[in-house]
Figure 1 (tube, chains in turn purple, brown):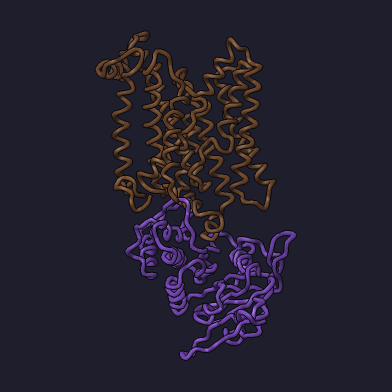
Figure 2 (figure 1 turned 180 degrees about the horizontal axis):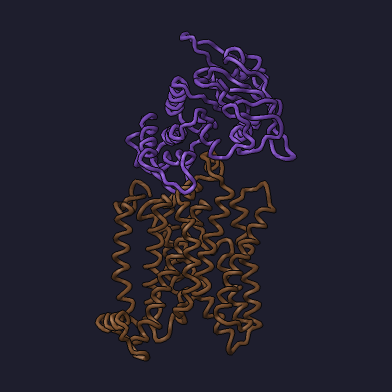
Length: 263
Length: 347
């Protein structure tokens, strides 16, 4: 079976401004790939290239086995769903309206969403536990709930791959746990997920594999315990980091802060 | 709208078939009422008799009631409905498209361009039909210029570039219009130009509607058909594209259609500001931001609003008050009120 998304020798960036190159990665169904890297390492540029929002500067991207560069937009939308960071839209659409927009790639140019599309939107909201907030203005929801609505929209899109740009950024502790739990559950149901995060702990928590990105190149790709070592994290982030194992077996990252009065 | 919003002001608080039905009823009441008002007051019985006479073919040519009803009032009422509905519909499109509730058909220099075209027509003493054509050409030319500037400036927020280019091109068109006013014959052309720039339906004739009506229809039909995709554009470029929308093509098509709608009515009514800005706001308060619901409600509301304003314009004083003055006098305070509410999201 083809990977849901596959990048080969991919160069990313803008004309005249290279952001990264030699990127090889693939995501299969049921798998969570976490993309980890400091600010400016090219995570967002890579995602935009994987979704065809930016043209590749070299190499190839394949979605479901087919090259991306000549794929019509609705076809891309049926193969990969984009979950942006939670944001406040200009107009106060209801949560249901936002989710319903996920059906667009499955509608003809002049078509309107029908009963089946509304049902799909209802189901997607129920799947993330927000059925009761369907009629609420999206702008009235908490940050975590908004992120869940955007995930629900991706579910309504019914694409086998979710591309999530920092789904836990700007969320409080509880909402981060809420969203991470949902992500793991979706992968266990068979979706392929690639997400970016600033927190190595999140990669340990939900990632099947992790890609460590630095200056637009992949410095390591594999199971989190293999890639996220003290040495690798310290090198990429430029501060001493130590990876500890909790009594439960879960691994966490601890930055070694300089002691006052020493060093 | 926020949590404190009352029943009438929440997004979609009113179901859209209900809003459409109420507005249609109000229009059905306002149209006959507007037919009665004016310097030559009529009774409903007179109007109905004149209509019946026309229908039965027994109307007397030169009958004063017949003339007032069919040569003056009816074209004027129809024009008010068309102008208000068209400007509100176009404003709704621009606001959704640019994800900015503060834009209106005046953005992109449409109104300024159409104004320049018409003023040039008056300056050259062209016949009325040619002035309309010039207005239309001026509006489209300004949009084309704005689009060309936006296409040439790459790598920046495309919406911002488009809006700023609209402001600049609009200012240029305004300067050219001012030049023409200075050069115009102060006894004949200048009053005509000034009156036209303030917007008026005073000199509308049935024949003026013949080219405007189909042009508005041609622009509106694709906007209605594409309403779902236009709604998705409100999310922003990246999200809309990721949801499967060909954003660039759709946006170009919507701009072209909304501009056609705007320029067609500017050509017959002059520059009537504020309608395309204020009416979509009110419509959004009634039925929420979903474009498919918003468009018909805004169009009906705009038609009703313009009918009321135009009827006021021809009845509150001994001389006609230009429409643009009334719409600004009503629209500007309303807009200030919107600003003062200081909402974090517009509705």
